[in-house]
Amino acid sequence: MSGRTTALTPPEDAVPPVRHPDAPAPGEPLGSHYDQCFGCGEEQPHGLRLAATAGEGVSVTATFTVRPAHQGAPGLAHGGVLATALDETLGALQWLLRVIAVTGRLETDFVRPVPVGTELHLEARVTGVHGRKIYSTATGRIGGPDGPVAVRADALFIEVAIDHFIDNGRPEEINAALADPDQVRVARAFEVNP
Ligand SMILES: CCCCCCCC/C=C\CCCCCCCC(=O)SCCNC(=O)CCNC(=O)[C@H](O)C(C)(C)COP(=O)(O)OP(=O)(O)OC[C@H]1O[C@@H](n2cnc3c(N)ncnc32)[C@H](O)[C@@H]1OP(=O)(O)O
Image (cartoon, rainbow, N blue to C red):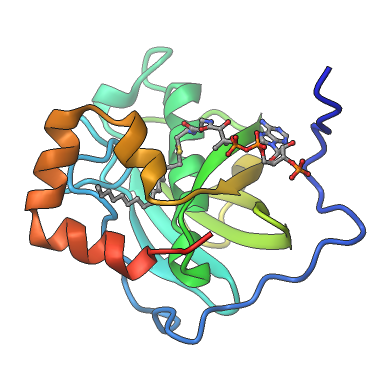
């Protein structure tokens, strides 16, 4: 046994998240962290093309329109696709903390079915930080920011160094990303010295 807790609420000695002084201003579009990302990449033909915007504090908003390719049941979004949209929105919080992190744990509540054609309005915020562990929560609402909640998630992201991607990714994509000046800029912007 690892002794690892599966709780997704920050422990008592967690600290409140701190918005990085160079974080994008509230209302600023965050853009994609990688053009081939299934969640947000503009060059990914199969992806969700989720577009996120910086919010106040350590929060983001995002929208995602459910297309026919995202169905599970006839006319309804697949649950895994909705979990991806939540995961990607939660991942975008890294722009505000200016750290690189990956999802360690993601717990999703599916509250309402989400029909094809729906514009899903997502909101995510960091609830606490404990060492490398970043606790966060997100909701997805149907039709608008005040629409009915369709999905919810709580997550634990774990801060990693850029080597996490270089050591574990396929050389083809890593080399292509390194050759893309935009991607290198993103990686440098995030660079951490653990
Ligand atoms: C050169 C090219 C340029 C590229 C530029 C790229 C820029 C990229 C920018 C931004 C990327 C954003 C991407 C967003 C996309 C959406 C987010 C995703 O879908 S990410 C993909 C899915 N997730 C994974 O693939 C993780 C796979 N898992 C792992 O790699 C490891 O398990 C990892 C890193 C998560 C942890 O491994 P450890 O060895 O580093 O650390 P340990 O010691 O195991 O954990 C640290 C602490 O966290 C807790 N922890 C870890 N996993 C946990 C879990 N599942 N549940 C509860 N606690 C957990 C542990 O108990 C420990 O806690 P205690 O410090 O002891 O208190």
